[in-house]
Amino acid sequence: MTAPTWLSSVFVAMMLGVAGFCAGRLVVARRTRRPAEVDSDIVHVLMGVAMAGMLIARLRFGPSALWAVVFAGGVAWFGWTALWSSSASATSGISGKSSTPAAHGWRCPQPVPHLLECGAMVYMLLAVPKPGHVMGMGTGGGSGLSVVALGFAAFMVGYVMWLGDRFTAVSSCARVVAPRCGMACKMAMGVTMAYLLVLMLLILSQLVSGFLDRAAKRVV
Amino acid sequence: MSESLVVTGALSRTPAADVRVDLRRRLQLALGAIWLLDGLLQYQPAMFGKAFPSMLADAAAGNPAPVATPITWSASFIGHHLTISNGAFATIQVLLGLGIAFRRSVKPALAASVVWALGVWWLGEGLGGVLTGSASPLLGAPGAVLLYAVLAVLVWPGERDADAAFVAGRTLGAGAARVSWVATWGAMAVLAALPGSVEAVHSGIAASDAGQPGWLAWLGTHAASALSSGGLVFAVLIAVIACGVYLPSASAVRVVVGLTVVLAGLIWLVEGLGGLLTGGGTDPDSGPLLVLLALAYWPVTQ
Image (cartoon, rainbow over all chains, first blue to last red):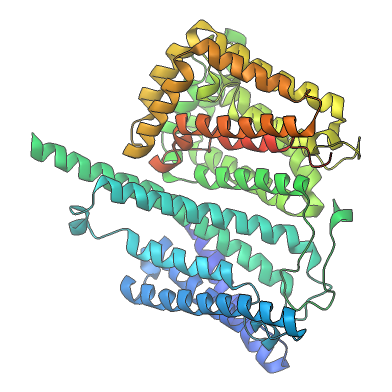
């Protein structure tokens, strides 16, 4: 099961473009002292590079486990930010002062989507075991993983639609560098991640059927 | 739609500014999300293989010659230009989804989606099998993709009757919207009552179980048995739903719409979630579309 090369190349070009844009935006924001979503831009640089490697093997470097640890760090960071954000919102509602992470000017004000993006990356990096490990995978585990992949894909598609809906409302109100390009990059990231998760459905299905075939042969 | 775009907090730093999203816009976005998902599913490697045109050609089976001949021709054409055809189909569906997401392009995207959906309904689904005598709502009849077109019309950003109690009524006018509901569900009731319907469900379930997770196949089989064992009862249930939008009180209509959502969920289980978990599905099938269709009739005002 392989995707057509031209299709993978299009997605890779998008991902490397997103990574380059986010890296450039960090530099410009620092030089011009404008607010930036430093945490989400950094994680998108890493995701762009990692997903390019998932799409085309030649671009892959570093062990999957290392990438998984990196994105697990992202899960922890955005999870903590989301918790802090919700508790700070409740506090500011009482005191009238804004102390949410967004007010600090360098953290993403919507950490939950990035939390799930990082979670999806960890999942994709760890869910497909090496051939030797497939033997230990039961049907229930495989189908459970498929449901998780479908859930992540559905979230990504919904997130892309949510961003698109807000696209026209951005330019006049945002002070961050290139806000519309930033949103377009997030949409491209969401579409590509959803595509990879859809590919995961087939991979997991094949893993489960392969396991069942081997199990049936043993019984026979 | 741009008139409903309200930015809260003009000095907001965040790119993803908060905007007001009413139920109609939510339904538009959900429809767009399904188009986008369809496009991504169409990009699956398996769709670039010979199985895809073969699947399209199967839609001709049982249809009369004027319907079947163009299906066979288009499947053959696609088979000869597989990579470019499938790539174009997938890209069109992705663009339809993204077009609906952006408020400025929602009208052209919805209009294009109607044209595309009707084309696919004929050439890709063989008119949902309604002319074959063996189509069942439990297998997606009258065709999942036809529901995309119906929904695009129902959530069109127009205001024929701004005081209508439900989304579809705002667009078409309450009377026309109710007629549309009766036509859709009435057609499904007729299809469910056809003698070949029950038999088609059992053979269809057996075929769709292949590759499904065990729990889903079990749920689908039992839901199919429950719904199709008394074929006429199922048809009557759908007929009741068809008439339900004419009930006088909003509470009663909400009960009918709620029942419709539950039934749509069961139908989706029978459909095996459109085969999404097998890695070979091209769309989520009719279940989610029926839920959206029902929500377009949810009374939002008394």
